[in-house]
Every structure is written in C-alpha cells, then in structure tokens.
Length: 474
Image (cartoon, rainbow, N blue to C red):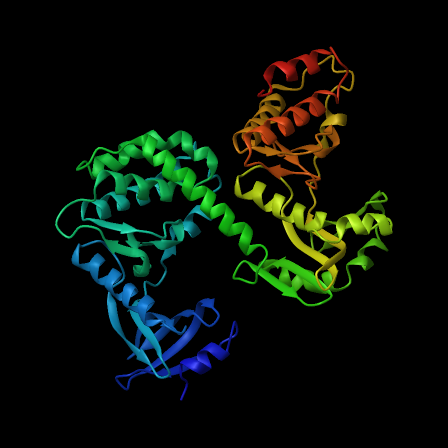
C-alpha cells in the first residue's frame, strides 16, 4: 500500500495513474498530476467513487498545519458564499500525510491562463482590463465578508462557465466574522494583488479602485497606502524570484557539484542540458559575434530558435586572482536579466547559466539567452547626431531610461551598441556591470555616468546630444 513516505520518495516523478487507499477505506485514483512540490505537496486530477475531484496530498513533515489551514479556508469561503470548488472529502494518508479533495471543474481556466492567452496585456487592452477587474471585484466581495487571500496572483482565481472561483484555501483567512475588512487591511491586500501586475498597470490604479468601491463601499480606501503595499509586494516578489533563479524549484533546474554550478529554466532543461554539459562545443561551428579577451560570444540554433551563448574567459593568472572569490559575470548577468524581465524592461530572455568551479573557487562561466535581432542604436540613429530619431524611437528610449531611474538601476556600459531597437522597444544587452542600488548616493553617481556615456555616443553639441541631455532624467 502506498503511504506518505513513498510519495515523498517519488520526488518530482510520482507515477500516474496511482491508486491511494484513503482512511475511510475508499480508493482514490490519481489520473494526472497537475502540480508537484517534491516532498511537500502533490496536486492532481483524480477519481473518487466515479466522480472527478481535485486531490491535494500534503506529504511534508508537519503537513497537518497546511492541511488544516486549507480545509478551514475552503470552509470559510463556503460559509461566506464566496464561489469556490466544493469540499468533497479530507482526512489522513497512511504514514503521516493528509489529503483534501474538492470538486474538479472540467474545462476551467485560471485567470493566469486567460491572461497569457490575450493578444495584449497592456493597460489599454479592454480584455486585460476585464480580467483584472473580475479579480478586483472578487476581492471586494471577500473583503466585504471579512476575508483575505494572502497568496494573491492570477493563478489562484479560476474561471468556469461564466463564474470566477477562489481557490487555494490555505491562503484564505477570516479577519472578521461579522463585518467588512478594515480599510488598512483592505488597502494592503489590494496592493499585494496589484504588485502581481506589470509595472505599467500602476496608471490604472485609481480606475481599479473605483471598480472595487462599486462592489464594496463599506470602507474608504487610501490610494497612497495601496501604492505603498504594492511597492513592498513587488520588492518581495522580485527578491523571491531572484532567489529561485539560483535554486532547484518548479521554475529552475539547478545542479551543483564540486566542479560546476548550473541553473537552467526548467521549461528549457530538456533542450539545453546537453548543450550546457559541453558549452565550448558551441563556439566551433558558428561565426563568432565577439572574440575578445574577457569574453567570447556566438549564436546557435535549436529548432526554429536562435540563441546566444557568452563565455566569460579568464585572461591570466592575475585576472583569475581578482575574480575567483566572487560570483562570475555570468552569474551577475543572469540575475540582472531576470530582474529586468520581472520589471518588464526589455532584454533577451536568460535561459541558462553555468560556472566552472573548483569547490568554492570560480573559473570560466557561460550564459545562454534568446537572440534579439534588433538594430543597435549607433547604426540606427544618425551617427552625426544632426537628426533626431523617429518619435516612437525617442519615446521608447526615454521610457526605458525613466524606468531604470525609477527602479534605481544603472546599466554600467551605456554604449549605443548595447541598446537595440526591436518590436517597438529599446532592448538592453551586455548586463555585466548592471547594478540595483540601495544607496541613494551610489545610485546618483552611477546614473550620472550612465547618462553621460549615453550622450557621448553622438558628437558633443549635436542636436541629438543636446536633446538627450535635455530629456533624460537627471
């Protein structure tokens, strides 16, 4: 008989189908795994007495606390008439685990799936506005009943037959059993949800709050407090995401031993792992994009995609002695690219990073990204600086630097060849020297250097140079 210890031992690859005997003697048939957190929680589509159910199996040591919170959250939603898949059964699994079964809503989609299917998720998109407004209205209903959802993201709201459902009872808590949520907690909860949206959605904040108050006007919501909660939530999410990029999890496959450290986006692992086992072989077949002393760059194809690999070289013993004790430039660029992507600042998608090591000592390193076919600004713009770029190019250039200034990020090497024009946006490449600053003084110094370096790409006193000096944030 399968018990909790065996479920833990399966790791990321539990078999399917799988039969599990419940504590009431009934047999639960797992048909398909939907989410796997190795050694912690398994979620799957299952059959119980001929009925389709969603099965959550809590298998970690001390899992009773999470199981109990999940059960209480589902029951609280049902008690307050907030739509949620109905509770079918719950109990213990032999060996110390627990299970919770809810109705399986066939054909349902999460709001995240609907969001990803949109042709545009910009704030100007009426469809995108509709999806966000549906979640805001549901939060307003929950707040009016004294409930909050602490794990707020689009994936925890399910759309089924014209109705939005709240899922993940583990994150639902009752703040008040008899009255609406207080204004401070409501603002903080709303800010936590808005932090999940792209940065550009902040301009829609007031409109979304109007929609919220149309459903729940029991409390006056302070927009400034919502913004503060949004910033806190976004910073927490960013640090959590960057941490995941360096450890084995559902998003990233990380392998480390005495000789190397390797992180690959899990969705790319099957395709790129063979490549990253022999990364130097990529430099043999294609013409090099760059063959410098400190780095070598080439591109390669996988299927219909063109990718770029950058090798960070060790030029000499002295160079190694300066570099071996700190994270490599590949490590630094890997995190910098993920930071930009998180903040919706255009940069080629980072796919894999590898450091060659001897224990804790770093040696050479490699970074694989998507290839951006854009044209660099040095060749795109008038090299004499006598003519201004097209209006949409001017706007895109100012937008990316305004966002960098807002996020206190310096690029560190603002040559125009490191800025590409592609798909109506300015893309940033060569992120080796990029920094996110916590010190205001350090930020101002780095920003002044970035600003001056960008302007120096064109002749001093030229119309383009003067325009940049006037328009770039100081």
